[in-house]
Figure 1 (cartoon, rainbow, N blue to C red):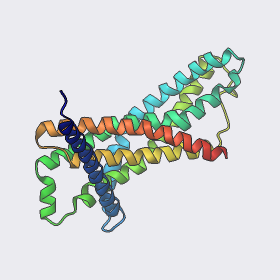
Figure 2: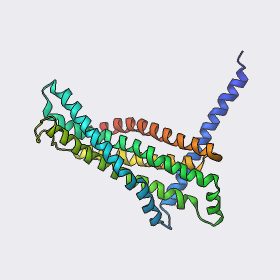
Figure 3: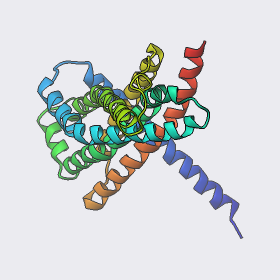
Figure 4: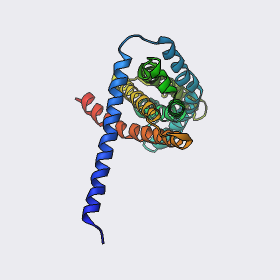
Length: 260
């Protein structure tokens, strides 16, 4: 028989643990944002993180963007040909990449490649007491470690999204014109600023989520190799799910705002 007192106590403990975890995450975010906008600014550390997050991700982002655009062209031509609307293949490819697939797939790939690396790096610094050593030398770890990584994520994500979209549209053009024998004019479409704004807003939000989750999970990881492993897994899963959930709400909000 279930003890109602024990069940209530367990439920209450779970609610308190979740509330406490959310509170720590928000406090961590506020401290990091404060460190980002207060001197001294460590520009060299920011450039190093831009290289790690942005430059090292360009090849995989370009490769995935190329084949995503190619697949969209093939699928779009197959679907629209049933309605005699192959003239809209180019528009379908471009809008799909700019508004949805570009920001989302870029974020998921960067989270898997760079987010896990950041969490593991910061987590190892935590368990080896390197972060405590920084504090003992009067160096703020938020300003020295977290702020450059989060700022680099905010800047790199829109740039990588732009690369994904450009390469993806190029891949769709190549497949549409040279393989599907579509007219080059069909694969060229006018892009509204509304579409660009929507993709840019999503990319910035996803970069924010990427930096926040990756840094926080590494900073608060448990001790030992098991703690770093668990934190890295949680970082990738949490950030990926958050991107997909936030994408739905952003799509709903931006569609309503721009339609009005």
